Length: 288
Image 1: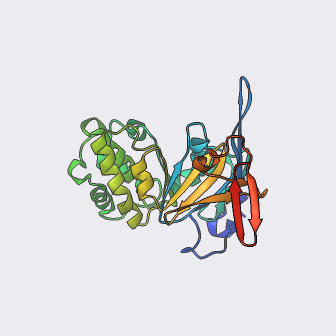
Image 2: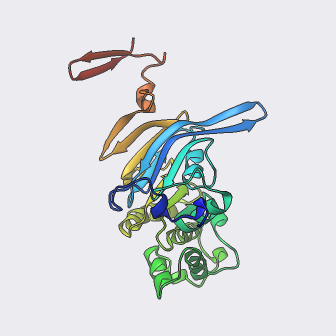
Image 3: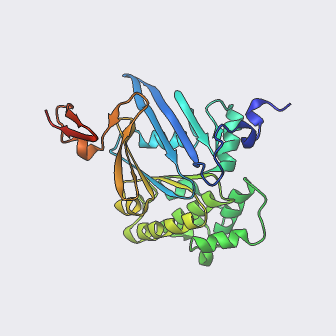
C-alpha cells in the first residue's frame, strides 16, 4: 500500500462537491507565526477563505497585512503553523516535504514579482514553456505554440529573456504557470515591476487566461487588476477583513463569531468600538 502522502487526490479528498462546484482551494483558520529577534510575529491570525475555480481572485490590503504570507501558504511554499489548505479538494497540511514539492510542481503555478526571477537566462521562450509543461504532464502536439499565442508571445518564441521586454518576460512567466492547466496560479504583485504599457497589456490578458480555464490568485495594489477580478479578498491584521463578489463588499464573520470590517469602514470607528443596534431584521452600527 502506498504511503498516505502519495495517495491520489481523489482518495484523499474531503470535499464531495462536483468538480464544477468545488473551489480550487480552501483555506481554514490559517495561523502563521515566525520567530524573530524581537519575539514571535503573527503574520496570519486565523484566516479562512475559498478560492473559486476558473476565476480571478485579487488579494488586497495594506503592507504588512499578511497578504504575501497567505499567498505562500496557498501556493504550498510554506506549511502553516496552524490550519489547513486544500488544493483541488486535497488537504495539504499533513504532507511530507517530498509530497508537498510534488504537489507544487504539478498542481500550482507561481509567478514572482520580479520577472527575471521566473526565468532561466539560457532558455528561449518556447523552451521555458515546454520545460514547465513537461514537469506536470506530457507535452501534447502544438500546445506550447498555442500557449505562446494566447499570451501574445508567438513572435518572440525563439528569443531568450535578455531579448524580451520586462512585460514580455512577465507574460512568459504566466505562460509557464499556465502550462498543463494547474489547479491554481498564484502571482505576487505581477505588475509592480512593469512600466505602464507592460502592466496594461498584462492586465488585459488576465480575463483571457480565465476564459482558457485558468484559476488566478493575484496579490496586488494595482486598481486595474482589482477592477478585472471576479472576487476581491481584503486582508488586514493577518485575517480576512472583507470579501467582494458581484460588485459588493461583504464583511466577514469568522468561526469565533467575530465581525471583520473593511478598512474603510473600520476607520470610522477610531476607538475600535461601535454601538450595535438590532431591530427585528435590521442591524445598525454607529460610533459610540
